[in-house]
Image 1 (cartoon, one colour):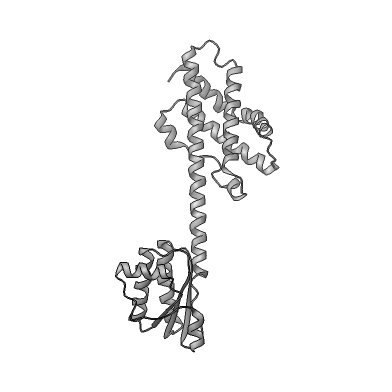
Image 2 (tube, one colour):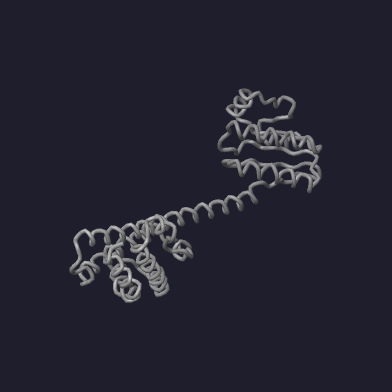
Length: 269
């Protein structure tokens, strides 16, 4: 690393609080963002920490910079308040540009070779790029986590084995089914059927959004599992396309009592 790298790194470490205090308000004003006192304090904390990592990157390898970067909004403060990712990235981009201008206008690079100055600028840009990359990854991971949590909650309420009388129940199949949701459907249905001592269950297919090979096989396996525990299965609401898919797969539903609609079964009773 060059002497200029060391010089700038030491300066950033010593003066990062002052630099952040100077550049942060300008950054937020330039972006015309509304922010509370708490927002400002959190931005300050995150940028102050980022400047420390940037200073370290000036005297580290790129691999070390990548490995040490944790990203912005590490505690999901802005994510939990519904702040869009692009707004956070914009703060980082504008702050980075302000930092480079600040450095160019200072006397830190006076007397240095041009190529040394370019190297410092490139490494600062790289460090911020890594911060943006890590921030984006953290944001996407949090979205995925929330989505999975929502799916789990949906699964809890979307497998309602509803008792019709003391011995019979109906299971409405509604929406799209991922592999995870299908497995949850099988597990929860079997558990509820045994818990409620259901002797016959009606599987209503009319609300299924899409019916493919995997779904057909999974539901057939569910029916077979229900038979093994002594529960009779009746199916309703099978669309022509569903029937065709089952035939193409060689799945034989002929031994299973079926009706065009749930109403027909209930009227028969």
